[in-house]
Amino acid sequence: MTFFLQMLVTGIFIGSIYALVALGFVLIYKSSDAINFAQGEFLLIGTYVCLTLVASYNVPFFAALILTLIFSMLLGFAVERFVLRPFIGEPVISMIMATIGLSSVLAGFVHIFWGHETRVYPQIFPEEVVKFGTVQIAPVYLWSMVIVIALLIIFTLFFKYSRLGIAMRATADDQQAAQSMGISVKTIFAVSWAIAAIVSAVGGVLLGNINGVNSSLSLIGLKVLPVAILGGLDSIPGAIIGGVIIGVIESMTGGYLDPLVGGGLKEVMPFVVLVFILMIKPYGLFGKKEIERV
Image 1 (cartoon, helix red, strand yellow):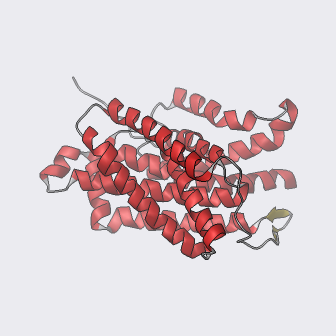
Image 2 (cartoon, rainbow, N blue to C red):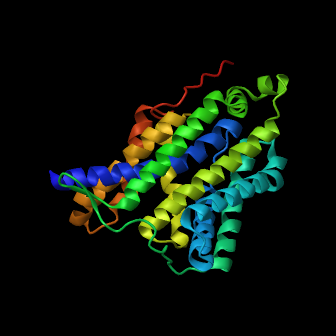
């Protein structure tokens, strides 16, 4: 029972980080109907920027995190303005292919500037394990959960009450109607990409503190895609719940099934679950079903 609870808690904590990164997929899909296949590279670049500030320039971690968020915001704005804005009004597949190309370009920059070696963050969070009954939790997981919950609350309030957040929701529902009301769709696209880069960077920094940093961290972008699709590509609450579900499934698979098959199954299981869910609910657990009338 103790082992089960340990795997469950670990899965929830990791899943919350997945949910944060999946938020970037949802925002871009809601604003432009496109899937960003460069999300993993946004995550990787943000992680390396924060690590460089902390390890090479001795910037305090939380100050480095804020500087990383500013850098990621500017990166998101720049990518939208110079790479993706020309595709507005073009078929969605064109924008998707552009993000695939962007992924390769950003990955190349990462390899040039930071190489392939695994790097680790200096000791930032306390080492002493926190105990809840028989369950032991590393402080890095607790801090990660606090940061993720705080950001999710901030973004929820932003989308619900702020003028810009309401404009983003209106644009997601109907771009033409939003334009007729004086909303700049180009501005909404830019803000969506900036937020996607920010949440990816935060997720990468938290995962980097847990597992170390190397180029393979960008694969988290592909791992998080099932989270977004599972919850519904147009649902923010779905991204949160989907992240927790995938995190728990991955943790349980790694704890119980990987030892039986020699490892590697937990990397595949999220996609297996995704296929079964989509066979039952093609729009995801909380996705909006679209009906086109001819």
